[in-house]
Amino acid sequence: MKTIFGPINSRRFGSSLGIDLSPALKQCNFDCLYCELAPSATTDKQTNVVEVSTIINGLKEHLHDKIDVITITANGEPTLYPYLDELIDEINKIKNSTQTLILTNSATLVNDKIFNSLLKLDQVKLSLDGVSEDVFKKIDRPHPSIKIENIVKKVIEFSKTFKGKLFIEILFVKGINDTKEEIQKLNEVLLKLHVTRIDIGTIDRPPAYNVSALSYKELHNASLLFDNALPIHIASRVHAEPNNSNYDDEEILNTLDKRPLTMDDINLLFDEESKKRLEILIKESKISKKLVGNLEFFIPHDNEKRKRTK
Image (tube, rainbow, N blue to C red; front, top):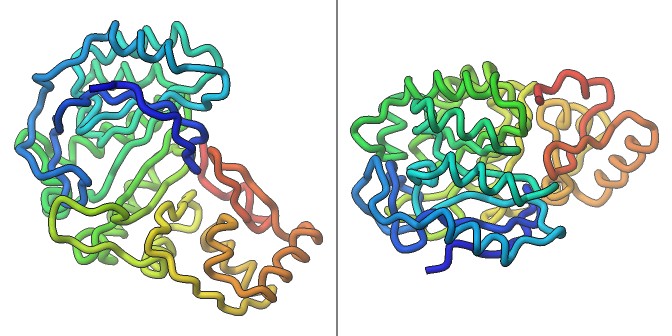
């Protein structure tokens, strides 16, 4: 099985060359309801391990200067890879100006060695689907040794220590972690973090279990329940249905004040007349464009400094 895949054009992270640290089988400390991989028993370690030299040789073969980011991932949880620290050191020797990114479920941040290894990366994306123990267990189905309160403490600590770009991802499953109560608890934690962007999404591939996605409208409504100082981005568009409503100038400014939007969001929410009003507001310098990670957001000019980004 090949450990290197891509490059893939990621809207959020640019041209991404992937490293799969578990290409042969699923090895994960979670068995998430929404996982695109088949259900499997959780584990706290990898038993099928790829050599660091194999990964680096494959990376050297495919890496070139048009790659924006080297993305460390796995069929499962990449931080279970036993030689992660050594691998990151070796990647850093050859990556030149290319950014490094890992996609992790956050659970192993409680391990000091892994915590410190991730500090060597340029970008880190941490998943945080729920912060209540019952919701966490229901949606992420973790290994018995994992407790959400310990993860939350380490996510907060990591966000304040990490010098690179930190992204948080929340994946909503209908009827499980999309309640006002759970979103409020998530909000309280997110306000303690120093992050570049918070991506909220929902199921966009066939899930391991019989669960349902939220619609784009439901995701947008959920986004409005978070503090408007948080850099929330709606990442999932598979279930997007155009709303195409009419907004006057004040409504446009109020909408963007509550939740900055990308052009993709605006195309779904605004009708053509509202888009023309938006363009006029931009020309009048009442609305600014702001780059967060690889995404461009529209935000009221007067409120740009208020948004919580690293």
